Amino acid sequence: MDLGTFISKVNKYKQVQDNTQKNRVDWHETVKPLLIKSLEEMLKQADLPKSEILVRDNIENLEAVVLDLGRSSSGISENVEDSGVKRTMIKSNGSLIYQQLFNGKIMVMLVSPFIEGYGQPKPPISLEILRPDELKEPFIIRHMESLIRDITEWEDFDDEEKQRSTIGFNPISLNPGNDQNNDV
Image (tube, rainbow, N blue to C red; front, side):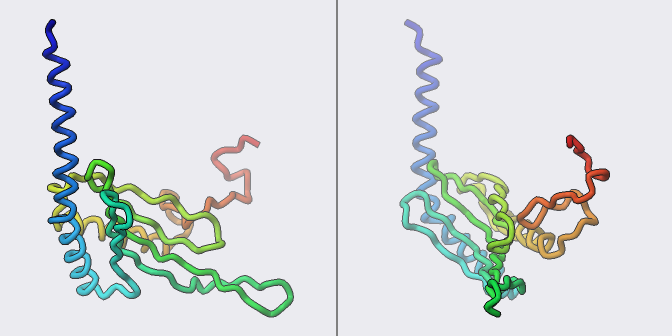
């Protein structure tokens, strides 16, 4: 019985399992401290207001380091019936997430800003998945630049650039003659 191919696949599987264990150790020993140190230094130098670094470690081996830009008043209020009372709509300012995956690799995601009660928030944007040994300071800087670019584009939203992403809702064309999809 020639089991050469099967044995090589089993060996590959064992290697992947070993990598998962190594990745999980690396998260605690190098990745998490690097993320916290780098993000703290970037926040300090850039003076980003209302930002905080959160470590979500309530599930072992599925931890996350989150740079949360906080929440603020959106400047928009809803009049509540005829009572003269206004309900302020809260803006979530966005975040950058380093999420440990089941196999110890790290998924990097950004969450765009959104206004609660005004459309639906966009799902998180996955930037990349990295092995712990691939995550270095230049990557973290690039991820922060992506976050800042995203939140800046969100704040500066208009219809001048059609390829720009929306601010958490899909605008409806009120002029069907100019709509690209007139299936009506």
